[in-house]
Image 1 (cartoon, rainbow, N blue to C red):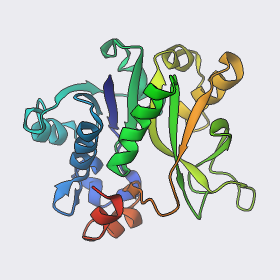
Image 2 (image 1 turned 180 degrees about the vertical axis):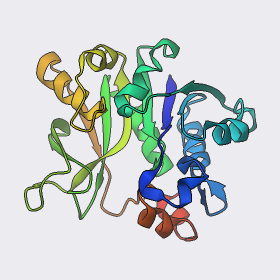
Image 3 (image 1 turned 60 degrees about the vertical axis):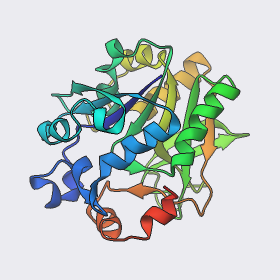
Image 4 (image 1 turned 90 degrees about the vertical axis):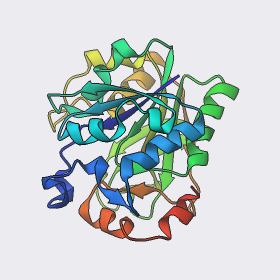
Length: 247
């Protein structure tokens, strides 16, 4: 099974750090953030990795090259038009020959055991779709995840304050059937002008009866996130974060 990591974004919310550095290459405790994710993929058993690159792509390619140093095989796919997570994923279709693949955002890191658990749930429960949700005290900043008996029932992107009845957000860690490509191709762009993976999941649930298995991280399970300047600053020089991630 191949693992796809999305690394093409501009990192607008991380400026000025990303004026000259690709956000996934920002140093955290002495290493590029992306290196921790790649090591997590290797820990979970993924050796074939696709990196979707775009903005300042040379920094990623020059550093990781073929992946030999990390005992993985890296393939690069370029996203010229930054049209969302779904747009990035569609570029990988021809490179994904298996029926299923792993996907994660390049600005999010979870404990390595979670990566491994995603694959184990997929394999042991014969699931076509698996999604990780992290616990949060502020469910209004991301995509709120609703589930019943660990099966996804709804995703609400940035719900209005006071409206959310869940403390779980989409973590950006998945296993998907390649059936998702058909849905993404038919998807219209969101209000942000993007093709978005969560919207494809909602359509798949409604029109194709997808049963999307949700893995809920515990409240004390830490998620590393460099999606915004303040989050990066909390991580970059904090030696304790590796212990929280248990890596």
